[in-house]
Image (cartoon, rainbow, N blue to C red; front, side, top):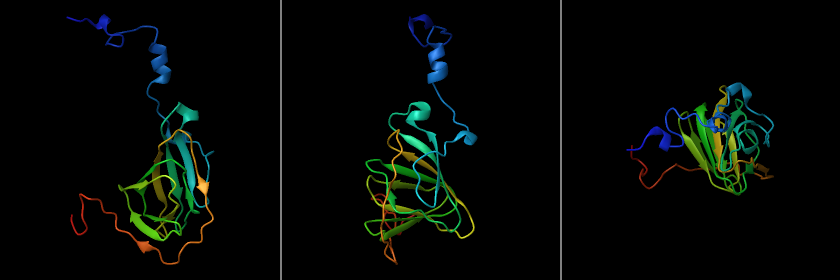
Length: 170
């Protein structure tokens, strides 16, 4: 039968690598220590929490995005990165496409997925309430490529449907 000392990281193990785990283990980034010095897009306030520079993250980036009432971002994409946006508060209206011709909305608790290189724009759909989101990307470096796109006036509304949730279903 194995004993605790047979396992390098078992309970009660106090070897020399404790200091490494203390500083290189789980990291908590307090809300008041987010980094505003990230690539920016007009109309939004991005702040970084988890980055390569801050915690050594190799494969993801995470932070917050705030868009003021009645505001919208400039058109942009994030190069080869995948993005996930989680809406915490407010109403997000996303526009995307070569001419931002498609649109869909998301509210608190909803997730938004943005594939690599997709031109898009975030819009705060509320005239009075701030839009607050959490953002995660698939690399430790932040990428934001701002685009000069003339948007179509009336974007085509797209219902978010996946194969397991057909339209009209609950």
